[in-house]
Image (spheres, rainbow, N blue to C red):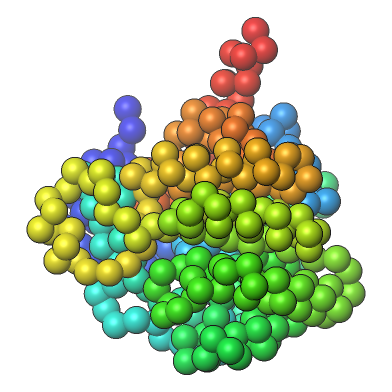
Length: 359
């Protein structure tokens, strides 16, 4: 019997969502600091059969934590102890910023979904970089064979004008690339005004080229570079991004970010409207995210790594994404509803599904 859903209902469901997130994350980090996390890791470490080669790296599992949970790199080691094969930190901006006004995070429990308009609240690239470096060194010591992977997701500082966006992204790239296993350019959050305009291929081409060059130069090695796109792009725009990624020889695409759509929700419509603007994540995004993945796979074949995210909650969801062409899969929203042993359950479930398929 699973205990966490009852615990969530009693302890967190009534609480402000951002406060609940903060308390939960503090608990995970406290377990790490106390040494409990190291004990848990003996039970949550992914089975060796799940090791996945991607981006020139070996991932302990194809399943990882999407950007948004650990925005500033405070809990990479702690989250790795829960069984995530990779942790994507961010979104991080060139300058520190507080994000949007609170409240800015809302649960739709009936839909197993979340609406957020956080607005890239973070300490800024210069403050986050030393944390990444320390976490990477610590993981290398603990896992000399195959360690959890650190991804870094970068975005535009809100106060920076769109015409100056490239230089702002370069500030982050130069600071963060040396400690990143891979780098993601986020041009698809709905919570920074104008940001999604950068998904236009004419804007995206010079941005991605400049970030890739700056990251490799700063790190003294090739840093795998991916772009994260929105589920709200038209199919034609998705095809354009796929062609651009191939032309620029990017390493991959992450599909997808949150959606501005509110279609198909079972939550009370008036309540949803009262929550205001923001990106919707979780179960309602599942179908569209899968559609975007399949379209990308049809366009790029095996030439790019595709990372699937959006509406992922169960081992079968993860396997479905892998079967549809993803090399790696990420989750986030279900983590809030499923609790700290979610990644471990996903990994164990994947092993069972694969054994069943091979039988």
